[in-house]
Image (cartoon, rainbow, N blue to C red; front, side, top):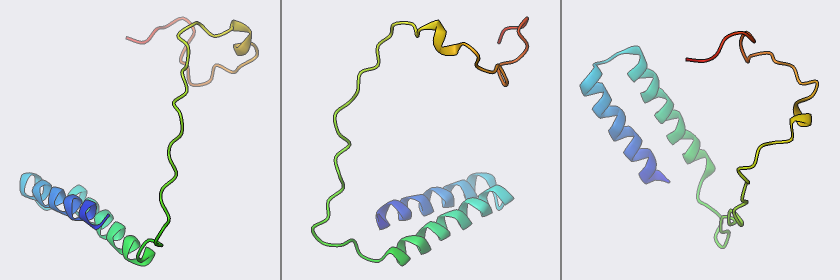
Length: 86
């Protein structure tokens, strides 16, 4: 995990060269520093514990959903009914 933090620090350093010492770059640097601190607080992983496998993939069919599933649903956030997305 420490290698990932080192890679992030290096990437932020390259951003600093490309963009200068901007607020965005300083915020990214601060975020990476916090990640490093958080990783230090976690300490070493417990021996013998392995991450659990993700499990089998679930296939989602391409068939259309049953229109009754949408009955009574609110349209908030979908835009005006007489307009379409570009």
